[in-house]
View 1 (tube, rainbow, N blue to C red):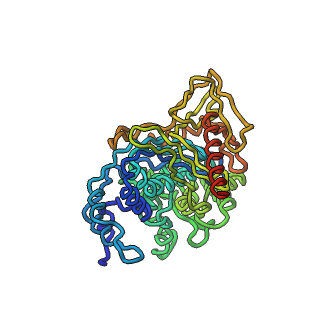
View 2: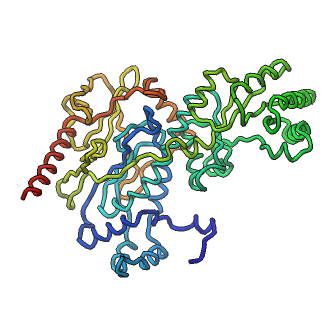
View 3: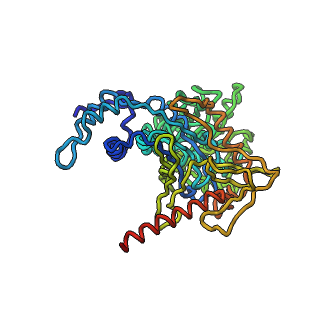
Length: 497
């Protein structure tokens, strides 16, 4: 097969961005006449990333773009026609490919807006529509939501550690490919980063871009002082000097000398950057030198394998760092490479018939899915958010609502009359038509920071965070338990027959 260039690869239809078994299941449903059935699926995740106390939802904008452009093109169908089974037979006959050619995603899709703080087992996306269409969305939706949600959460943790200091995302060179870095740069901005070094992300998303110079700039000159002066001459209003190419503290003296040269010309040295060594010690010593030379306003920017834990420890050691450049550990989410998002069937019915609620069992309670057509209601009092309740949209909530912990049903919380609430899932598509107005990225970033401020500080701890109350509306929990019993009893009776 002829190899494709990058520009050719990224101009292709993305409809086949799925796992093969989604298509083989779709064919099986179609062959058995199940294509007219209506289904509901929910995209959730099972555990907080980074052993933290919160998660930041992201990825909805790319989900919208994917759905709007979802159609099987001729090249997709031609490729599917070539696929063979174990016996050499075609996996997909022509009449099924004809069905796919005419397929449109007439689904209702609801999702939490980007920047929303979410918790395990809460649906981030609800998809309702024809069974085949809903099924084929499983793999791409997980791909589009899991990674940006993970990175936005990591960035929010870095933002918390840095407090009010600017945070720059510097991860381009270490990210996993083009898709990886563009997704990560956008998600990092949603999570609270102030800017990126990624110029393409700046162009595509409107994220502010920042950068200084590298060690190769210094090494390209015969003398470090000469390299600093050349950079100052090139950018007299934006000079930040990287000082650890040879000897860090000696380089501070050279930066000061060029800073004085800039000052004599009515310009200002912006600061210096540390990229190796003991950042606490070096920043403290550099600060003393800068201050004694009259450069108290010069910033010290630090990079070098930073993450939220390193930043917090450096602050504890009184490091004199005002700007944080965070790269590899952020864009790769090095300490947790994946969010354990899942996409599960929760209800199915014949056209206009009653819903048949479904549940997936497991020996692990955390992996037992929730039945129903679900929504999340967030309750708030005068002090902030107090609890989230997962409920079925067809349930009668007019009576007193009780939130039940599904992992310990003896723990319940009664919803109080004076609490206000917001339902988190909002309509995005109706019958395949977009009904949601995508907000600008800057507004999404602000939404993240505002959302976090509405929660107790305890959920933001990195070690043993406070557990925010999330549970199921009691009648939904009772339904889940009954379904578990019914299925297990059926299995037991079948086994003994």
